[in-house]
Structure formats: structure tokens, C-alpha cells
Length: 197
Image (cartoon, rainbow, N blue to C red; front, side, top):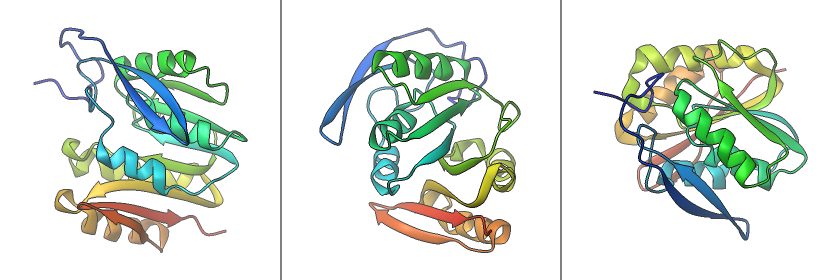
């Protein structure tokens, strides 16, 4: 069975288009089969977009999918630059198309298996992690994230309580020495940790 966290989904293409409104602006997003949440922006991503405070600097969106999180943060934070990465090549292709479709100048997207192709550090990392891939996949992302943050930088993520939010809090606490649940809605937790200076 193909998953949205597969490198090369071999499911048949089925392109679609969805709209998403952010800060009074409606963006158009091209979607396809073989990517996460093809038919609408999922509740968790929407909550994460609305929970990240304004920032300047460089941000990394891990597991960007078709790009709605990174594109939204780029619109909300015009003096930032958002780098989007995903292991799913189809998702990366869509993210690049959606950046161009919405005329976003302060974002880019490229393929990366975890942090394998990432060469710089960031002030912010955001992720709606692929929980269904299991702890063997997501825990190394959590563990490596601290190495790609500048001192004082933050990581924000969304995890459903029933899919392991409490254990995610414990894991991030063990890595960063701090962790805070900054928002909760309908069983989704927005979780934040800060890399100490």
C-alpha cells in the first residue's frame, strides 16, 4: 500500500485544486493522489498555521506535502524565507507548482529524506509530522531538528492527542529540555520547544 510518506507514490495521478483562505487572501492549491489530505487542508495544518506567532528570519517546513503550511507562513511573514522539504517527490513537485501559482517569492521546496539535503540552520521549524509512519521515522526527525535550529530558535508541531501528543511532549522535553503545549483544539495539540542559547 502506498502512503503519503513514500518517496515515489505509484498511485495513478488524480490532480485537483482546493482553495484556502489566510489573512484575507485566498490561495489556490493543486493537489494529487498519493499526497496527504488531497481534498482539503486538514484541521491540524490549519490550526498550526493559526498558532505560529509572527516571525522574521528563516523557517523550515518538514514534510511540507503540497505546501499549504509553508506558503501560508510565507504570506503571513513577508520578511521571512520558508524552506519546504518532503520525502515524497510528488508532494515536492506540487509544492513548487503551488509556490509559483500563488506568486510566492519568499519560499522554496525541494526533496529531502529527513534532513539529508538540508545544509543550513533556521530560526523556526514547523511540521505536521507523518505520525502514521511510526516512531522509527518521526523520532529521528525530532532528534535531528535541534541541530538545524539557531540558538533561541523554536520548533512547532501539531499532533493529535490520540496519536501520541503526550509521548511527543515527553520526547521533545528529553531533546530540548523544555516543551509547551501552546494551543489545543478538537484533540489536536500544538507543541513547541525552544533551542536554548
